[in-house]
Image 1: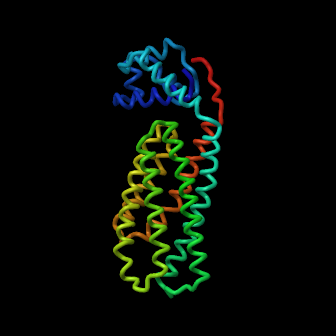
Image 2: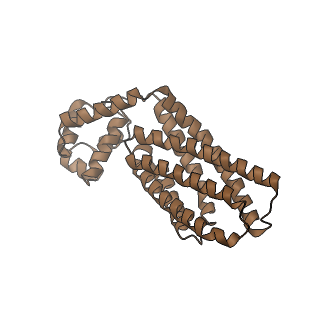
Image 3: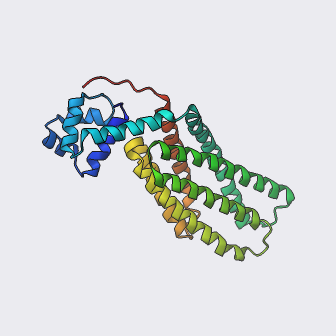
Length: 272
């Protein structure tokens, strides 16, 4: 069994049994410091230590080893292109963030000022929408890669849903350029806002579920996504969601980069 995956799976199993580290100490008589170091992936424990912990957790060593080997085989089969996918997703996330900030400013200008930009501005706006959608798709592929790596099916569903919702909003944004009656846009934009809010909440929950593997950074990203999703669902607080959007995407970019580092490093372990 290899670290840090061993520590992550032991942590997940302990939490599945609703046990704290202190309670596991009482059941297994293994020191709390040893358990902490094993779960953190700092040491590679002896087989007898793993067996003692698994016995305390009500799991057989053979069953746990089989599951562990399956996970390791899956990770071993991940090609170098998966690391590249995450790195490219990090860069795409930056492009997505910048394009969304510019588009947000242009949307405010359009709603509060003249709705007739002219051909040149319409082309610029349409081009930015296309850049935003493409960068979001590449950005989301990074989370799809993480969902495969850490067996988080909800994250994969949320990432694909985010792509669909963003493409839908992009089409609506481009279509709105040819609409003269701005009042007629409130209903479709309200629907899109609710849709993206619901997707954001699911995405946030899936990121929080990733915290055992990716740490508190993933939990923070999840909380920000949920807050943003709740704001979008209200519709009337749609523009306030932009305030949360910026830090949310920045943290998500950091989560993807941490995933890239995870796949790139060769963990050094010592015997416990």
